[in-house]
Structures are given as structure tokens and as C-alpha cells.
Length: 172
Image (cartoon, rainbow, N blue to C red; front, top):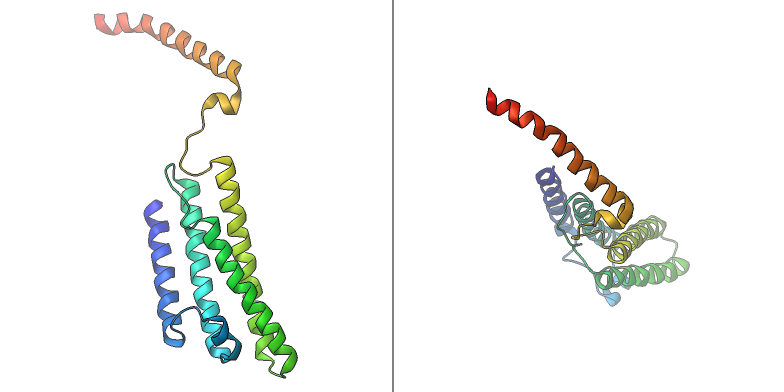
């Protein structure tokens, strides 16, 4: 299962980078984004989408793996959200001054990506608070001390009960 998720992560990441590589060299600067053509902005959205999906798959992998850490820190995700906010602000101003209908679709795409990164940030924050990734949880933390002790004595009694069969096995 882990290999399948890793394979999917790599495949999706490479396919988005391959597609976005034809239209843009990377994430645009603030100055470049203000004057960029709609095709370049959509290519940048594809880059943000590839980053987001890679992070989402990484978090999914960490949820099923015992020893794993998130791909990005909360500061890195906040930087991406900040870049998206700058794009949204710039495009909103640009849309007010122009009649270009393609900007509305691009704004929606940026909003969708920002929401995706916000949900990733929430998962990373929750995982850091609850130590979800990379740390095993003690049974006493989950069930309380009394239930763990009761379970231990039940296991001891079961072992003692089956010890009487050990003598019979030796005779055979």
C-alpha cells in the first residue's frame, strides 16, 4: 500500500511539473503576476496544484505509516498561502480595471488552491499538537491505567491456562 501511494505521489508530481513546465518557469514574482497573461497564470495555478496534491498525498502516507513526518512545515505552507493571497489581491484589482472574463476563472482557481493549502495547514497543525505522525501512543493513554492492568492479568491467566496443555504435548 505504501509503495502504491509513493508511486502515485511521484507520478502526479511529475505529470504536473511536466505540464506546467511548458507554460511557466515556476511561481511568478509579484511584479510578473500583475502583468502576466491568463495562460501564464493558469500555468502557475497548475504548479500550486501540483505542490498541494503532493503535500496531500504525503500527509495521507503519514497517516498510515508509523514513522513519518509531514513534507512541509507550517511556515512553508503559510508562505504558499501568502503567495496565493497576493495573487488573489492583485487579480481582484486587475479584474476591476479590465473586462477580461478569463480572470474570474483564474481567481476561482487561486481561491480553490488557497482553500486546499488551508486544509493542509490545519492537518499539519493538528498532527503537531496531537503527535499523530511518527510517535506511538501508549495503551494507558488511550484506555487508562486500570484497563491496561486488567488486560495484563487476563493475558497472564490465559497463558497459565494453556500451560496445562504443554505437559500433554510433551507426552505425545
